[in-house]
Length: 337
Length: 223
Ligand code: SF4
Figure: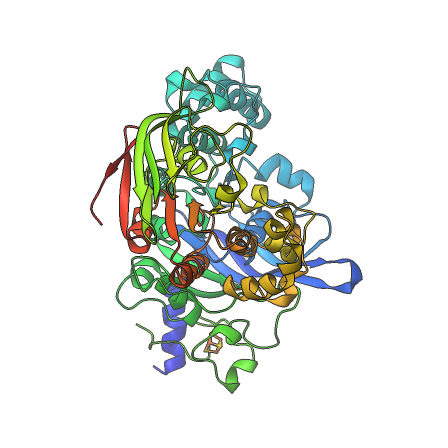
């Protein structure tokens, strides 16, 4: 086999049986046009698959585009966004796929959000209605999604609470009467009502204590183990290390590496210099920051966006490296494992 | 010396957030206060930063007792303490440019004349480039805004720095960069540090010693 064939074969394996993918994202780009003619290149050419029972962690600095990617998958981008590419969501019956990027708002609102894609939000406090009890919010969501009878609603709400490990005894409380952890579980219960096969968790652990982070992500992992696909968007590498099967690293709007979690966090480590820099910044590692700051998404350089901060940059890097074999770098740090 | 001696504080005298907490930080020392959220350690940070008056106990800062102030603690003591909070968005005035934010304490204390010179020192110390200094809060990332909030806390060259979950919202690289900026400042000035947080790995790596907040009281723990 030629080297290229080997890479292709390995790619096919790590892309995870693409035909079984719950979500298949190809060449997804999101642009925002600003007044004055500037363009924010928030997401560029994102490419990944996510299978049932799998957790993919999307990591990167705040403002790197990862939350925009999540919004794009939910059809929640503001009006001035321009999107291209596809994000195919498998149909539960295995029939047609839905392209989340091309679908109109009516389809997204009626058949996708809450039903086939569940969102575990960043700030449960902002997601829950303060003046209504958890039970009433869950039942309302059941009604909106399924329109079932009163009795069945009650049962469905209680089932969702149980799946999210939200204690039944607290269902009649208001959001402000809940601890941070319970509020997060209430929000997760809302996300689980429609029994969505794809769960999108956008920074679900921001501001939580480590114990609560561990419990929250362990619960998310359990939902993946039940056969859902989980996209965990986070800046918390410890949380990603705890539950992810694969890690996708985003820098300046581009996915620069996708690696199996055991290699990424293990002795071999990631191959992209930015990913290695992020890990080296951890307090239980070198605790050394990457010098400089990420570029503006409205003023990206021609070549590799990481070049000004990269210890390995050469002249070659003024040409942007393509994302092939799960990596976008001219001088990856070690040969493919 | 920063000394909290059996301090009780809260927002309701009948139900204080914590009772009888004692903690000392020696000059030049860095102490990490660890504990779960909702246990009152942020209130303790506010007491140490002279932003919240204790209900009982003694707070002695550099030999001066500052337990019983009325509306505001005395200025010469307030300016001896710099403070950085978790949420830069709520801590920063959205109308100010980052440059104005950095030197806000100088203006507020009538030292406007020093502002330009101090700005030239502060901006590189916290890693802010000239093009960022002209922007307002909504035009920068959380990490960039938190850099500005740290710069503001250092503007008056405080002898004490209180960091309450300063990096809880930030990625690993920005966290390491902000901690490095704090440590450079402390090396130059000999300032003491109280870092409050829940990340054990981070505070153990950062501070000379850590104190665990147990049953709503800090208890000493090894380095
Ligand atoms: S392409 Fe060049 S500049 Fe970019 S990460 Fe790789 S080595 Fe560094």
